[in-house]
Amino acid sequence: MFAILAAVSSYAEGYFVTINGLKFMADTHAKTAMLVSNNYSGDITVPASITDKGVEYKVTSLIASCFEGCTNLTSVTLPSTITALSDKCFSSCYNLKSVNIPSSVTSIGSECFGICSALTSIDIPSSVTSIGDFAFTFCKSLKSIEIPSSITSLSDWCFSNCTGLTSITIPQSITSIGSNCFNHCDNLTSIVCQAQTPPSASGAFDNFNTATCILNVPDVDAYKAADGWKNFSYIFNLDASELPSGGTTQCEKPTISFVDGQLQFTSATVGAKYHYTLTTPDDRDDALDEDGKVDLSAYYDISVYASADGYKVSDRATARLYWVKTNGSLDTSTGIQAKSMRGIVVSSDDGFVRVSGLSENESVTFYTVDGKMLAKVRAQNGIAGLATSANVVLCKIGERTIKVSIR
Image 1 (cartoon, rainbow, N blue to C red):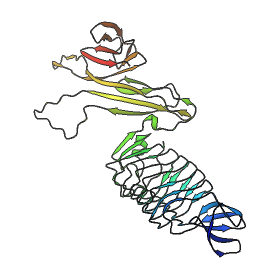
Image 2 (image 1 turned 90 degrees about the horizontal axis):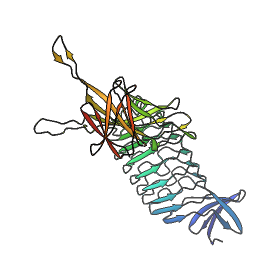
Image 3 (image 1 turned 180 degrees about the horizontal axis):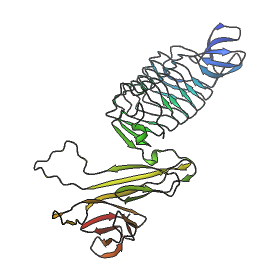
Image 4 (image 1 turned 90 degrees about the vertical axis):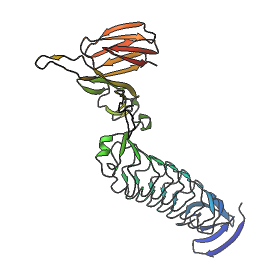
């Protein structure tokens, strides 16, 4: 039982009552109560119900601008009886550090947390389906936020001027991002967008430095062609572990090959699409070399996974593509010995070494690291392979010897 501290302003179906420092409007007809504005400070716990004059009232709502301008408010705990956070509910609460949002809440109003400059993090439950304009604008201490998949759009100016935000994941469910959503998010350097189709985002990244932010997405080409996204300087394929699951059956793991001068991915899953990453140790940016001689590693590391409608993404396959010299032939008309390079892909999985890009019947010799020959294998359809229990093997292809880690 709560002690009645004050009661004012009676109406036909309701009246104001203050209980334990919290001011409510009690609806005598519906037997519900709404928390109204007051000069709140410190740590506040809003009860699920109040009792006055022997009558219990369920606390179901917060009035618009309920805590607005409460500059000494530090934390708020809300009951599961609240279903919405009203417009400007916590606006300009400069010292507010934490708010729990119960799973009963389905909407966050416009400017709800605007200028909550001390708020460092907030958990949005999956019950929330909408977030209003300017909802988190000028939350300068907000470092991270997780957007649930129940949200389908991010509103105008939603995270504008969140200068402490360094990374954000945009779930697959998002189909649109409003104008200036990330306006002046100066330290946001990593965005993961899980949507296969780029969400409409015209104007979403205005006044945002797309040259210093890494964008990870499922389909690089699609995002490079989409308004709002194509201005990013760094767009990379999203790691399979970051993608949400689809269906119950997993895509078959891709195979990586080099065939007819082209890198090739294949999967046994019909309709599979491939998400790949290529890296090379030869990448340089304004490097210094004093004698003008640069050694090149001449290989790419390849990583790829497969996705398909109705399937979970596959496990990731890895391989290394080497550029090796061919045996040149003599041009009798000029006397010039031809020199050229070809691609050889080497991969290993579950104790099996696979080499592709070979000529038909070309031989590959496999050795242990101490020089013992394991086998000499001739290529069929450009591929040679060896099953082995060794942890590391050496593959000799012509004059090139390649070291392969098996496990």
